[in-house]
Amino acid sequence: EDQVTQSPEALRLQEGESSSLNCSYTVSGLRGLFWYRQDPGKGPEFLFTLYSAGEEKEKERLKATLTKKESFLHITAPKPEDSATYLCAVQGVSGSARQLTFGSGTQLTVLP
Amino acid sequence: SAVISQKPSRDICQRGTSLTIQCQVDSQVTMMFWYRQQPGQSLTLIATANQGSEATYESGFVIDKFPISRPNLTFSTLTVSNMSPEDSSIYLCSVGMDSSYEQYFGPGTRLTVT
Image 1 (cartoon, helix red, strand yellow):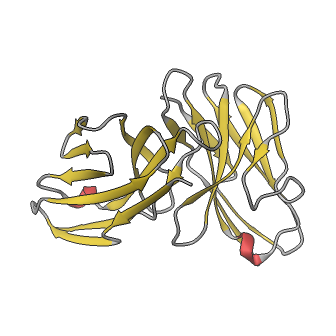
Image 2 (tube, chains in turn cyan, yellow; image 1 turned 135 degrees about the horizontal axis):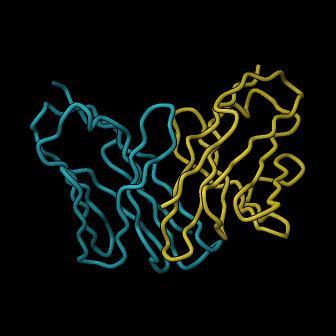
């Protein structure tokens, strides 16, 4: 069974204070690892897909990296508008086709 | 990517009634999914909506409680039947892109059962 664990559960940063969110995963075979951003009362917004260890993707202040056991979402010089819950999900080769297994998320608050 | 809309965006329903949630996509997609997000929790897959065949349900979810229709490649509905307060959640539809493994989500339907 695929499993995803995210840490920390909550993170408070000052504006400009860089940090990283962790996503540890266990899958029988990884098709892809996904990062989403979710604002309160809204659906998850797609950020990145990572397919293999060593892969990195960047978008504005966000950078996602992947190893064989975990992924990091690095946030550089965050701004208050980066405040949201960040969700990590994996898609393994077992289970339903295209099924995503989600972690519980990291709630990020960036203070001005 | 895909643009996904859901109706209604929120509803408050009485115990024992049913609610049908609609999901519309701006392009034809093979795979559509329904998720539930209970208060303060992450997303759990309810079922995969298959066009032209029965939906595929995950463990813990049954067709009698969550009947799903998928009449074409751009539309699906999820019905929450005989509701109880435990069904109060956000219900989300998503689509899987045929050209990649990515999934995109709709804005969600916030359901409160009293």
